[in-house]
Length: 113
Length: 108
Image (cartoon, rainbow over all chains, first blue to last red; front, side, top):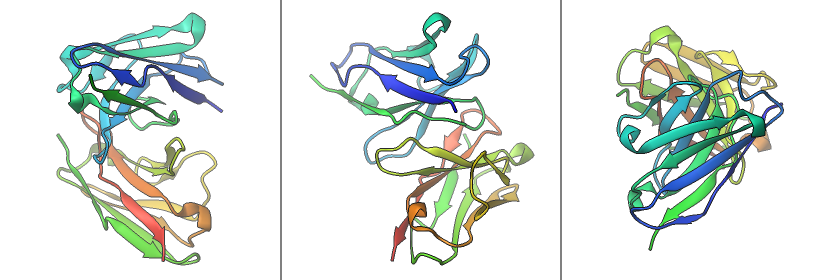
């Protein structure tokens, strides 16, 4: 069974870069697509994007997103630049690019000075 | 962008009762590209149904999905206590992927 776990700082200052990592266990990171999804407090789930060697991203975020895979560590990452309070959310990593088979528990990132 | 509207917002039922959750899409979904997820507080969301009606691995057969085009339904035939949770639909027929706002199934 694939398990995913997000990690990263819980607090980021406005205008700085948010960096999150997802560690995958129980599966090969090279064999499928990976996704990021977020949920701002009190709001709905928002798809950020999926990727493997290339990807597709939400156009509202695309200019600020960088993603990468570190196969040696079975990890994949998300960076989101120039964050504002609107980027405060619980961030989830997940497997898949259509529907999402497995999800992490999520990590809350707050953007505040 | 395809907007998904779930109804009702909250469903208050007793264990053993049948739950019927609706998800309506603003445009017809290609190839019935709709999934359902369950989420409980502090837990990772769990995939229940994909391709509108196919149960994911390990999902009990009391969960069933149906629908095509713009109207989709998740049915829980007999609610167990562990089924009280939030449920979300999600479309993957087009980009961006989008989610419904969720239906909370609570104990009456």
